[in-house]
Image (cartoon, rainbow, N blue to C red; front, side):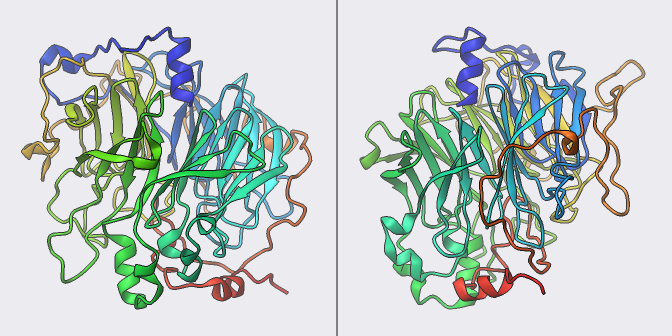
Length: 513
């Protein structure tokens, strides 16, 4: 994975030496080192050279965090595939980086838009060059890239396969679906077994199939992916005859809800985030989704080691005025787990004993930030992306979205084995500091532009439209489809579409006359 590559290049050994302001105070509260406003920020990843690449809903950006107190915008492209008749690409929630290659994918939700994954050469992060394009017949909520292979979540409402793509040529290599192992899922409407996310590491795909569970898939031969083992999951038979309203509720709240899965450095440990809420009227005690740790040293006999519960809040419901604090995206670096919890903030855990994770750092600004991810950057700090406007719309290009940098707490910092400090329930223990006269954190020489009324892509130093295109990978480009209302970020439209079967999906995606 990219984190391991970064650790190797930084000369990190098996154990990390971490430092930061939290360690000096001997407490778990973290203060941001820096903050860069970035309109529409969603997922953020850190390249081997320390450059942060960010999905910004209508494009992607590159950010220099070499000085974590003053993150600086290096490049923006808000016109990806603007040279296409049905472009540009929109709804870009995810980017992933591997060496000099960056995968950019969208749209995150169904709708009448161009659907594709675009690979860029980012060896010069100030001037990315387009390498390949693969148009898809499905929406693209998430992806990953490793060792020259892009993995896509092929939610086609039929088999919802894992799809592998050659990063250099854009050609499809192979597919694998959970129905190959458990055919009964093919009799269940789309929602409960959406392929929500995938991570790649050392020839293994870690596939989060929502209620169908987390699967390990061998992709060492990307043309022939094969199942290794199921880490966890619910039986398909529970859903076959389930009423639509019951299925919609089950879709939103635990158990299940496997949102993202990723391993530690040697694959002996897998973390799974469950994105879930209290969605029913008759189960007041349902808590938001947790983060789980599994011993996968023997993948076919994976064992749950620990559950890290979501931060508490006054209203844990899915719908307003609910305050989302469910588990979202995370990163593992050595014995450190970095996690994001939407309005529940970001958290750092020492997982040297994975059966007893210890909270060593936390930041929460309930009314000002909604964190999408937390990612290891160096031995001294980590990066987090907030989509901003916690109460904003699902596909918001919030002006308050931002990239944050935080100190990594010392591993010896006095922490809590129960990661729910009471002070986090209704208040913000460490609000984002106001910039002062000498603070350069929130300003850069090239500030992120505001989107205009027509959502016209902004110009970039190296416009994507001017870059030559490699051969498109999909011989049958995705058809134009009627407008569909996008769902909540991180979850997509599946709540509204929970009852759809293949026939309804084909009707929804019928090409316009």
